[in-house]
Image (cartoon, rainbow, N blue to C red; front, side, top):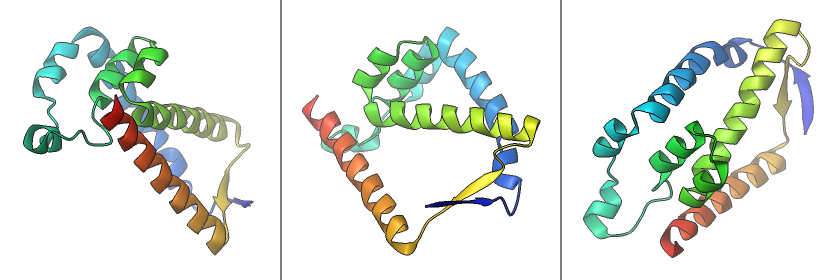
Length: 134
């Protein structure tokens, strides 16, 4: 994998609307979780009785908004990992935008891209296994 100068600032500049949405969601999930819990239903679980890989994601988001990362991990590790990666990306994007340093993109070979796709599939299957077992 190589780091190349960014060809377009668009992905990095997406941090601003995503940050505003994340702050709004964090406040909403922290102080009014019952509103979203009433509306959140898994069609796969309701229809077939089998949880999907993101079952428990709403509870995990509510627990993360309350800074209970252990509880969020137990609710859904896949959603928790995605939120942590998103948080790290947000910090990088803010620093790169403000300071001008780190304005790069990751570029990989075809084999590295294939390995990343396989890794993502393995994480998805592991998350689904977690939901079925727990």
